[in-house]
Amino acid sequence: MMVTIQTPRCQMCQQSSFIAVDVDRLQRFQAGEHVQLVWPDKPADWRELLLTGTHPKCWDDMWKDDNDA
Image 1 (cartoon, helix red, strand yellow):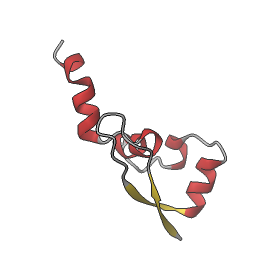
Image 2 (cartoon, helix red, strand yellow):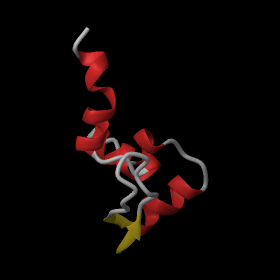
Image 3 (cartoon, rainbow, N blue to C red):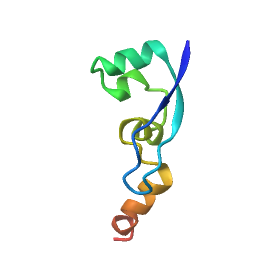
Image 4 (cartoon, rainbow, N blue to C red):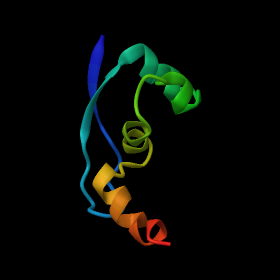
């Protein structure tokens, strides 16, 4: 069964997102299992959105100076 959850607010843009997750996996994650073990099939940017609320574009903007080096 899928549920829609709200992510934390992004530190860059202050906006939350809503994502659909499987209830069984969500319970495993909430019990302390590592996000990459619960959702190995999801890309890293999706998992980051779930963990910290950081959007992919905001992540790129946050680290753009590091990529220029």
